[in-house]
Length: 77
Ligand code: SF4
Image 1: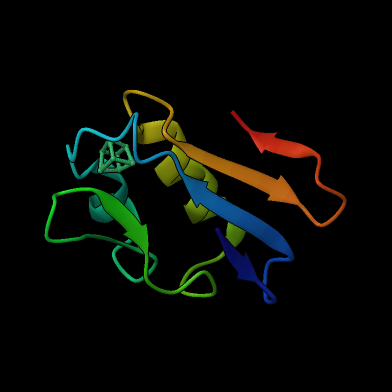
Image 2: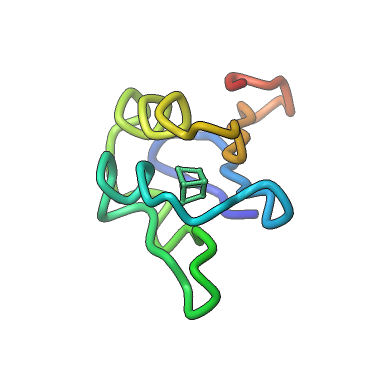
């Protein structure tokens, strides 16, 4: 779980769901990267505007990226 103070959201990657397709990395390379197991990790939750982070989550084919607002409400999916 990574907290973005800039965007006031929490970003989580479900490691069980992530298949390492890399679409999130392509969309927001300053925010997401693949680790040495080819699973996406959040490297900088403040690395992009919220719209780009949501777009990255939308581009994930398995909806492995969960974005919550500061009240814990789910923004995506
Ligand atoms: S787009 Fe989804 S499945 Fe692909 S690396 Fe990112 S989180 Fe994992």
